[in-house]
Image (cartoon, each protein chain N blue to C red):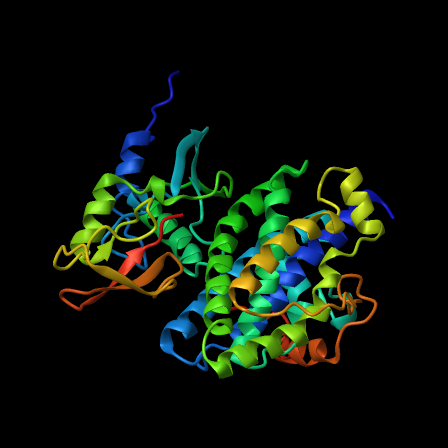
Length: 253
Length: 157
């Protein structure tokens, strides 16, 4: 694997995470429990999709095939996506959506903090921009997880169920492979495993405040960030997200 | 033979840009918003450097179009818009004039403390957050506990 191949894969991982999660969150538009939450979810989705344009835009530039961020978003099939599985699992109820957001935001904020020191100044610039938005996402998702976890009997039960369901998807964010080794060597990105300690401290504190219990098992579903095996949910998501460009190739807004 | 130049001055261009309203919050200009980072002549080409507010803000492409239209209307032929994402946009770049106009319009200007100083309608300091997000990516939703009016707060980032 050349350095540019690895760099391209790394950028797809960043951009596909924000793209797929952004799309998932946007599915709430018009359906959230209250208007304020609807707006908050739509805003979060918008930030994530905006960040996708930057990551996939740079990925296309590094790839050098004359493709655009849109080509990468709309014309790849499921096996070419490099997002972690956590981002593609269905929304479930509002509680599970916010729990997923929190588990992702916590990783995302730590990752972007490290990427701000990237040896590649384009990566550092995107991280600097995105980290401001993500700090805000994390503040909200953490507050909501605490509010619902330490809320009514029903909201507590649902949040614990959400955590139990999502926890096995957390480990994938910290798995390292050849791509990561290449990125570490080039000083572009940190080793994912090196983020785990900080993540555990942050997540334990918030989930503790939320009176929720972190499952003991460290079993982790994997295959998303390497593309080896996505869940069956990703293909269904793509049929919605990519429909227009598939049916009307090259259609412009 | 000396060339007769008709290039408008940089100050003139800044004035023109200060007359272009923000598409979402038309009471302030693009210059007030702090997103115009630089205006420079590179030979015959006018280069305007713009920093986006939020990555996904739908107004970004409209802003680019508005700048282009405004400057073309003033006779600028060769124009280049440059997007610069670092340093990232911050609400510290809002002008004083912009902050005053926001408040007059009913939008509380950003405060480093993280919340509005007072209700933009009645001036009461008793305000409460309704939602961290508002009608556009750059705003949050607050309410006054005295006059009970809801209002937008320009988030501090």
